[in-house]
Length: 125
Image (cartoon, rainbow, N blue to C red; front, side):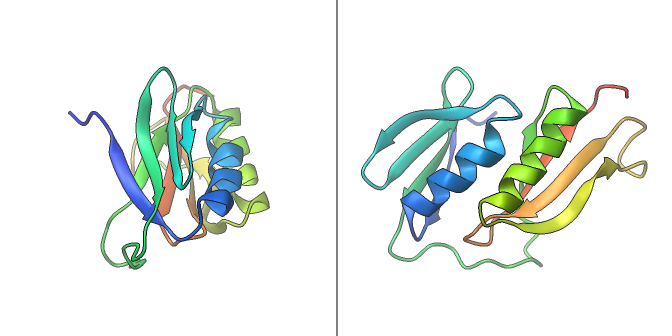
């Protein structure tokens, strides 16, 4: 449905460290970089992270979050660890979420600008 999504951040350098660490384990990398702009994806850019003078304020009650597919549960675990190591906050440790589905394995973090992120794997154990 979507070709890409763009988010505004306060500092691209901080976001690059965070997103590089969080998105590498599920198989995504920075495919495009210019001053103040980062593009992440697997084969093509699907997430643009751009410096913005007024990023959208974080609002945990908005329901907004972004979920990244991970090929393995280990990728979910590494997403979570990398995100926390580079300034993210815990919003749900890695594990099965039986209320979402039998093999729904996910972790939840908040990035340095307040965006709520999830990594998810549906592969059995």
